[in-house]
Amino acid sequence: MNKRYVFRRTNQKDIKYIQRLYHNVFKNKLSKKYYIWQYKYKNKFFSYIAIENNQIIGHVGFSIKLIYFDNKIVHCAFRHTSMVLNTFRNKGIYRQLMFYACNQLKKENISFILAWPNNLNLKASNNHKNFNFIKSFKTYNLKLNFRKNIDINFIKKRFNNINKI
Image (cartoon, rainbow, N blue to C red; front, side, top):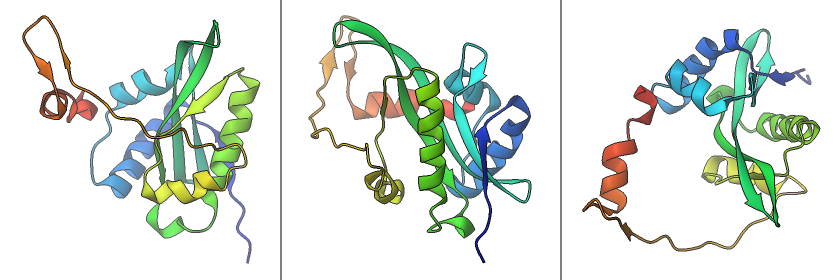
C-alpha cells in the first residue's frame, strides 16, 4: 500500500511536536527559543514538515541569511535539523520533503542552499538532481586579540549546549 504524506511549512503550533520528534530522533532537547531564532525570518518559518495521520514524522529547517555572492547580496538558506522518525526511514520521505522545501524556497527567491549532510541524509541529498558537492576544505584556528585561541575545545565549550538557550 502506498502511503500518502502531507508536506507543508511549519507554523508556531507545530514547534512542540517538532521538539518531541527531535527528542525521539536525537535523544536531545531542542528549545522553542532556539527554534524560533534559527528558523523564523521576516515573520515566516523556513522549516518544513512531513505529516502522516496528523503526526509530524519528518522535518527540515533552513536558517536564512543574507550573504555577498557573485557581486551582489542574496538570500542563502543553511539547511539544519533534518530528521525523519526512525520507523519512517528508508521510505523516501526525506527526499520528498527536500523536494517540497526546495520548491518553496525557490518561490521565496532563495538563491541557494548550503548543507553539510550527515551520513543518514547524504544518500537522499545525492539523489537530488541539483545537489552538488563543494570540495572539502580545511578549517583553521584563529587567534583573536582577546587572548583566546579558537579551536575545537573553545567551540565545544561555548556552543555544545546551544539548544538550551
